[in-house]
Amino acid sequence: MKKIKSFLAVCLLTVLTFGTVAAQDMQSATDLFNAGGKALGESNYIAAIESFNKSLKMLETLTAEDRGEEGDVMIKECKDIIPQIHLRYGKELATSGEIDNSIVQIKLAAETATKYNHPEVAEEATSLIPQLLLANASNLLNAGKLPESIAGFKKVLAVDPQNADAYVRMGVAESRLENEAGALAAFEKAMELGETDIAPKQIAVIYLKRSAAAVRTKNWAQVFDNAKKSNGYNESAQANKLVGLSAVQLKKFDDAIAALESYYAADPNAQDKSGTLYNLAVAYEGKGNNAKACGYYKQLLNDATYKQIAEYKVKTQLKCN
Image (cartoon, rainbow, N blue to C red; front, side, top):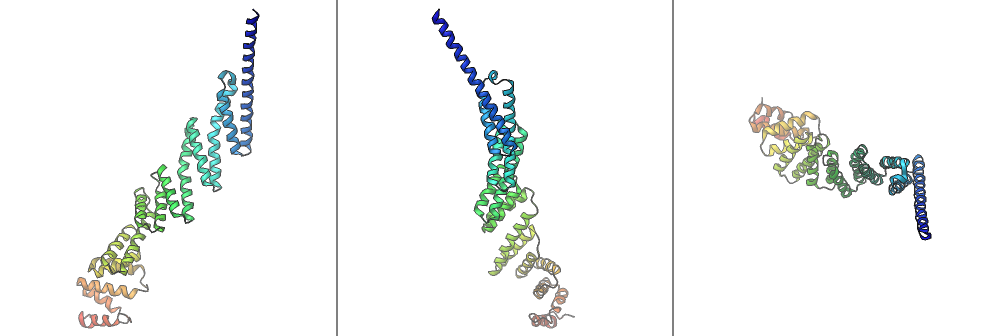
């Protein structure tokens, strides 16, 4: 009988010991929870996150009976507040320009919000991630770190494939690296996604440069084709000039007249006015419209460069009135 009493005494002691430990853990979890609230009030987000996470972990190790209703409330509040803190901290880091660190916090906000069943926070955080990635890549672009910026824009597109702005900026980076194929692909994709301002203008510039380069080798077919493509994306006076000059050389007189008259109308007092008038005269003469040709040749009778040929055309060949 004496042995039975001893055994019961040991069991009772064990129960009391477990009860004491549980009470201590509950108190520690409560202290951590309160410390988290205090840190959050002081905008010490790192300390707040650490305290709430430790409190949550400790509370979840306790039985429902040991933690009681108060513990259940704290568990819910920890799960409510942790994603919010990550989100708030991430936003503040972004505002201060710490984009890399901001992205880390926003991703944690999305992860914890999903884990703790807060879809509205997860949705907001998920929508912010491509914006932050875009800002980071754009900073690299502005700093002249072109390959790094391109890698950054690809990260944006990995999470947001429909981001036309990322394609535009990637196209700019590729252009600065003189990778025309990469730039064109990026700008064209941006246009597919509805970007109708910057992308077509940038594509027009690429084709305009190709056209101007072909002038140096007098490859008039390339001059013409690239200038026409440039105008197809964004009409410009310079492209019209190149279309006109190359079209005269290729005897595409209708194209030459349309382009050169448009170029001349844009700036009737341009420095190359005489050359434009001469090529218009040649184009009209090539079409057999001598009246129009005479009108342009006559405007060159006092021009130092074209006077001799103009006099010959007006007085001898075309016999203009």
